[in-house]
Amino acid sequence: MTGPAATAGPFFIGRIRITMSAVSRPFWIALGAVSIFFHLWLIFSGLVPNLVSRPLHMALALPWALVFVAKTPWQKISGLILTVIGLAACLWVAFNHGMLGDQYGFLVGNLQIAISFALLGIVLEMARRAIGWPLPSVAAIALLYGFFGEYIPGEFGHGGLPIESMLGTLTIAEGGLWGSLTGVSVSIVAIFVIFGAILNGGEAGQGFMNVAGAAAGRLRGGAAKVSVISSALFGSISGSASANVASTGAITLPAMTKLGYPKKLAAAVEAVASSGGQIMPPLMGAGAFVMVELTGRPYVEIMVAAILPAILYFLAVWVGINAFALRYDLPGVPEKDRPDTRAVIVTSAFFLVPFAILLWGMFGGGYTPQYAACLAMIAGAALLFLDGNLQFSLKRTGERFTEVCLSAGRQVSMIAAIILCASIVIGVLGLTGLGVKITSLLLSGSGGMLWPALLLTAVACLILGMEVPTTAAYVICVSVAGPALTELGLDPLQAHLFVFWFALLSTITPPVCGAVFIAAGMVEENWLKVAGTAMALGVGLYIVPLAMIANGSLIDLAANPVWALVAGLKVAVGLTAISYGLISPRPVLVRIASGVMGGLVIFVAGV
Image 1: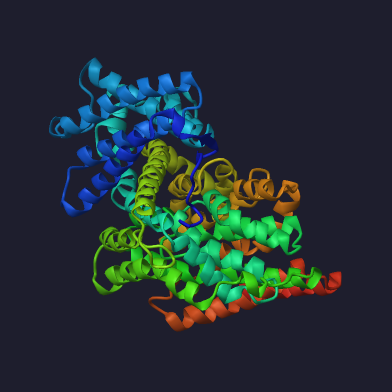
Image 2: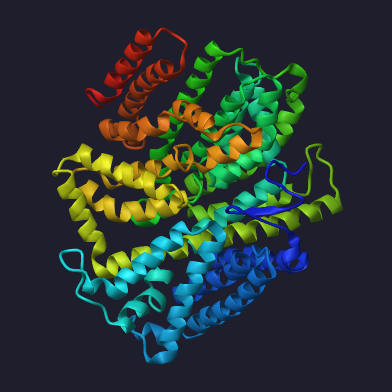
């Protein structure tokens, strides 16, 4: 098999179900291959002007975001028209980058104004077709504020911006659409998405499942623990809780329900474990790479800082499963269904070899993360030629490379659409000064106190994250809340990790909880029951980011490993007590006392 993410029929982008009938399959395979080679070429070719590489990145994403997702003839025709216009606009910017650099973000003539409006409108439509209305709606409101905010009375108005200056900064300068956030998408995120597509195209996914089965299958609640381990491994490279649920859940959910696990528990385990994949190093989806750009910290530093909190999160899930095992009879995976030693060793090599090369490249070789990923990608591509029995098949290999091209093309385009759209919001916040005003509002609303400001930030992250992808919600929230939190005394990395964790809350927290919806649908259970169980099981998602603030040493593993481990042990004890208090079938007073004691351990006398 080709791993849990491989598909042979319809594909999914956002919430849109599509088939190959949109346009001929060979075209999409070729386009995916072009996208892969383009992004690899950028890494190996040296410096390419930003006003060339970033517009071309968007140009390659246009057909996927506008045509590939088309379900009706009208959507296909309109998508083709918008794609042609968008391609012309992107190529115009790329070919004229030298001239545009001399204009310093100021448009000249009606043609340039028209091109700017076209680019902005097409980016909004790309995001709408890829992920739905919420994010493009936020971006559209931001644009309207940029155009008409001067008419808003009071401190939340702005002094007015010449249209040539505002549109120029957003579309022909290295800000707005072509800013540093898009640069992260071009040079780092796209590379790791391609790396993930290569791993998923081969036996790596099955390797995740086999390692998890061997490590936890025989334990009490073993089927749920297999789901936790496999989803953590897979989620680190997928970068999407929903994609993780749909892929690993196709294997783990039937296994749990077959063994008699309550449906609400099986779905909750998968939703919670899949959500945690985005905070699990070494890859952490796209969030870590965006954090590199926004904080100016090296990728390795962010990865090391994130490791203990991620382990604590999955520890809480593990403890929660043990507590549920006191309520229900949760058997392990039957011996006949557990992988044999040979299968574990062979299939684990399909992800261990690329991961080892990746880590060696970053830590031992001193290469940039994206260059190290390219080296790991070469190893992963070589492994596509073999199956779990180390046998070669030309037909199977061709099918795998085909799926890699299709998967990489559509995933790179979806992330490009998200980041380009979020870049509009960030650009307007900077141009109008609205970000500073919201930061001031946050400071005044919290009375200049840290914990009330954290609470307001957490609520904002939860609300924005309900229908906006985690990375976009994090970028927007940290742009306005990050300065306030750092002004109140937080280290910038603390503030960014806090916001990123809370931007993930909406995956399991009602009223809109994407991972829960998908998992509940797969087991045909009421989503509210699943959400309630997931919130108890995933309590670490609510507690750990607060613990990172109360115990600053927790993210200081590189500089102060002893104190970081002490803080981690302290938080682990508290989380264990809270999880048992929430879930175990003990008397109510015992559970309340356990939860209170756990909270005191975590938050009193921080380390």
